[in-house]
Length: 185
Image (cartoon, rainbow, N blue to C red; front, side, top):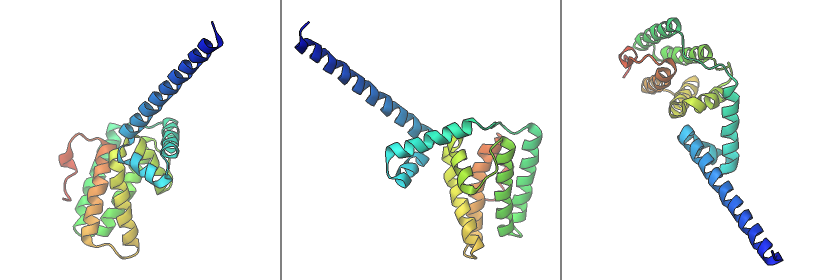
């Protein structure tokens, strides 16, 4: 075999390896986009680079895999559903208090499910791994609560926060019976 033939084979091998690598990266990116949905785009926008965003999302996945995330027990599920109904009933008389309690109940549900206690940003990132479609609702509700703390949120804002909280609550509690959750509309 001549040097030219060996060089040609080496170039072909390198090209095949490069193409294989690019295909694997594209598949990994597509898998992350599918799993994280809109949160993928948000991470890319926030970091300014697809690779950096993907590394962050992969780190979230690894962190959440270390948690003991589990469904609620039937007893906890029923108690949380009862608490949710009580919170929604309270909305009529005190929308701000009801929204605060909804936020608190969501934190309790997350803890019961096995997510560690932490700040909003940490919980949002953790939830994005398995509940990517609902985290924007959590983010929006949190924004309303921040405006409420500054005295800038109306009753309609509180109602919207409750609807956003309910979306995540439904996913985390998994009652299978949405009629148990629909008092505030």
